[in-house]
Amino acid sequence: MSNQVINPSTGMQEMVFSLNSEEDLHNALVEGDKYYRRQRIVPVKVRAQQLMAIAASFRENADNLAQTATNNMGKLISESYAEVEATAKIAEYYAKNGPRALEPKPYTYAGDKQAMVQYESTGTIVAIEPWNFPYTQVMRVFAPNFLLGNAVILKHASIVAGCALGIEQTIIDAKVDAAALQNLFLTNEQVAQLIQDRRIQGVALTGSTGAGRAVACEAGQALTKVTLELGGNDAFVVLEHADVQQAIKDGATSRLRNAGQVCTSAKRFIVHQAVVEEFTTGMIEEFKSRRVGDANDPDTTLAPLASRNAAEMLQWQVDTAIENGAEVLVDGGMVDDEEGNFFTPVLLTNIKRDNPMFDQEFFGPVGQIYVVKDNEEAVKLANQSQYGLAGAVYSQSVGEAKSIADQIETGQVFINQPSNGYPEIPFGGVKNSGFGREMSELALYEFANQKMVALG
Image (cartoon, rainbow, N blue to C red; front, side, top):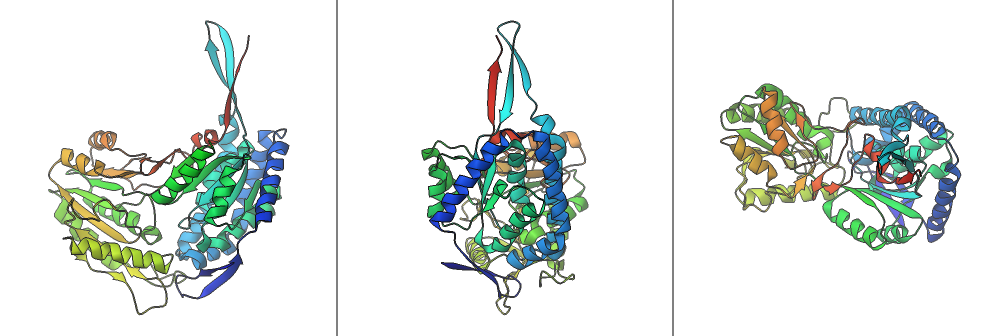
């Protein structure tokens, strides 16, 4: 069975690839298990050095990797280069900081007896990764598990098949054992089969809430640990005493970067009534200023959506919201007379709680403005969501912003800055946004055997 990768800017075929066979799947499991067992006797510092070589390899291959991402999923070429660099920085972070985090941790018990927890590898991890950040999402899972000594089998989104091959080759170019990361093009049925294998000791998925439920069910049947980074409907709260102009700039950047295809982007602008007029005026200007076009054109400021299906789904969501009472502040949507998946920004307001789109994630350049009378109402609205991935709070009083942040039910809150991912700090959500953590030292422990050894 053959699959195509279609360029979102041109609508033209980029590549054709075939799904892997049952034999390929069997061989990957065998090689992954062999790798895991070989690494049991290899010092962590050796893999740390290899991670530095992998970071260097990503930088050396930046031109090819960036162009492939732009051609596969439509990311602006400048954003693609930035993502390759961010991927290298994640590898560097674990190379420099991971060995210390994996040192045994001492405990005292029964008075004066000593014990320690030591962190050991467990086997092969399946990474099921999305198309919107085709390199960093993979490195978030690969780097900590590689340092630990786990093998990784990558099941990437089909529309970024070229990126998946590029990651695999870039790691091989770093002179790293090829079994450390094996890319497979698999069906959902093959993924389910893979998860049931006893050699699989963990599953990391970034994707939709529906996909998370399906994978968690499969992993639960196998009693296999799983981490899930799912959707978001993040609140961007602008309080009465905020620097409104800064909030406008950051809010627009957060909502529209990567063509709005970011799980943690600002999706719901919750704005105090005292500053909503200024905020709305500025946000309208920002949304109207974006230039939609070919992702390779340096003058383009808003790339196409990754697929035609994504554009059609987003248009349906916008239409449904409007049909149910939403007010249009910036009128945009699908551009039908172009070959690519172009979608001009849309800004909505007056979305009531009975609107079927009230708590749905708009995965594209669509913003929503909500007006609140006070901080209490802002917190209540922010928490009235099935999701809890990230958020932001703006106020020139950091104490006030921190007070609001403490009350928001989400995995991450950023004060006076838009949400983002940094290797130094934990990343993950609550509620229907999933569970488990990527990034920081916490990611090292997700699929580790935290073995306790008690000394007599």
